[in-house]
Image 1 (tube, one colour):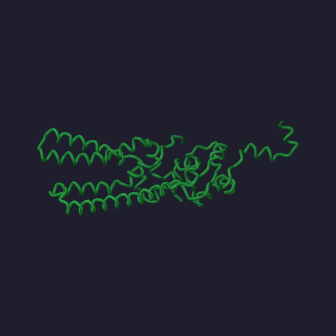
Image 2 (cartoon, each protein chain N blue to C red; image 1 turned 180 degrees about the vertical axis):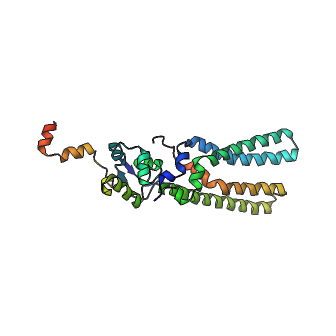
Image 3 (cartoon, rainbow over the protein chains, first blue to last red; image 1 turned 180 degrees about the horizontal axis):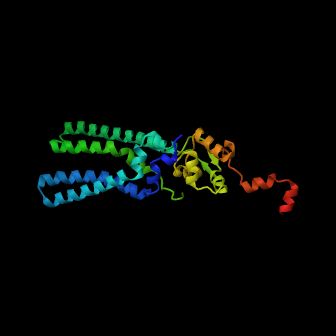
Length: 162
Length: 102
């Protein structure tokens, strides 16, 4: 039997984030990364100092979102082993991993389809080492954070009543 | 009395609607959610999900709740909506005591 007294989620779950803040953190992390590498791509081509400053700002936005996810109960809820979770929390975590796998597999499949079509039609594809790295880091970001993002996005508003 | 409905989410289950008396039983005993959670080994938020009917417990957790309250599972969980306890008690009272209380 899991004991709530030894459950590390108990302490962090007493300061739960609202759903709005959780979703804002997810959007900040993912949209922050996408817009950061997009602006960085343009900034590299134009060698614009102003755009590089914007890249820095977007990096801070992305990091703020990630820090909020990493330091809240969402991260523990999505990544803790069975003995640290009760049966409902285990179900939430397992469902989050299922949805994450579906989303990740879908994203990789779409990326592969795009690459095949782009190759045939001469559309844009990552062509420099930096661009390939940006895509790889994006996939790594997704793989590492999707379960927590799914929990953050889907869990209902917390109850304050102890 | 809360009920548990089928949903395609981690807190739901399939098909059956299950009602429960957890909130009433906890209130009768003057317990906080944290007290009950500690007693049956779950997070206090899980007690809230149970009471609101947003999570259906495993059979093991249902037995632990039954053991803790000293009641059979069917006194805590039911497929039919529970009548209010006051109504149940009143209708089960002998006629004499019913008169004396009126």
